[in-house]
Length: 343
Ligand SMILES: Nc1ncnc2c1ncn2[C@@H]1O[C@H](COP(=O)(O)OP(=O)(O)OP(=O)(O)O)[C@@H](O)[C@H]1O
Image 1 (cartoon, protein in one colour):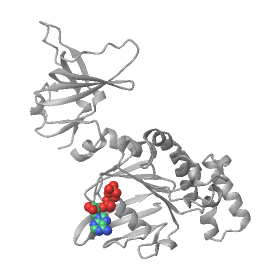
Image 2 (cartoon, rainbow, N blue to C red):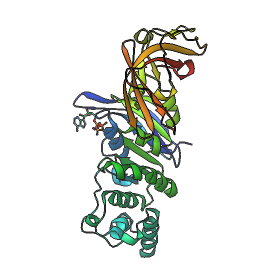
Image 3 (tube, helix red, strand yellow):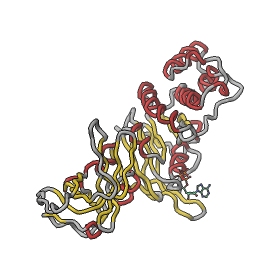
């Protein structure tokens, strides 16, 4: 059974179309990320789900009930925004309890549920602090607890980590998923950061210019991008046509674009006078020259000029790994199964 069903939603501002026939559904307890570049329509779609905007066309169903015309306050949707939006004059406990009070839960329920939320976000010892006494990451955990406290039917998170600095952001990603899963909240997470979407969600919708380009699990999106846009947006993919790289192989490639992940490519130095190499039956082989070598954590990132393309190759920097120097001529081996046709 789908918990939320978004059916053929279209929208425009001043005759400019921004959403085209968007349909997707969400299973109970699932975390779905909507991933796409700035201006692709993510916020507009969220506002339509919350009821802040009426769509030009289409329907929204929550637990099989048509909520398209229901006002926002009747939808029981919790929202966490990019800015923490906590009440500055209320302490952490009162901020979390706020939604419960508004919904007129009795005192004991408010006390118990607020404590449960404080434990969930691991901030019990900060219950009587004011928001300005907390770090950005802590404030965002409080914002999450406040949204979860009144048992929302659906939780929407609109770029909740983008105001945080890089380190806190990285730490909070997995914690956010853990908290949402522990609370059992069905959620939609909006982001333009592919790494964040991969780590936090069960499923991802990749959006571009008001359309869904691909829908799938993080692994499906990462390993099988459906088209050039998704491969380009997911990051690090090498994109080329066979003519660009002057490949030699046993299977003829089509004259279109292919995507290949940097970690799937092998490179071998060409030793002087020994440039001949066997044709591997399951690979395409080409010649290249290393133009740059960079360390990115435990990964050695090679930039290799191959034909008219610059190919990225990632190798694990294990103990004893001897990396190749810029200027080295190399044989580049790309396994056929690593190639994805995206043109
Ligand atoms: N109130 C409005 N009036 C007119 N155009 C708007 C309005 N709100 C958004 N737009 C336009 O609609 C398109 C989609 O905007 P939207 O805010 O939904 O994108 P987004 O993917 O959320 O972007 P970002 O990641 O930058 O927040 C953009 O071209 C934007 O300029």
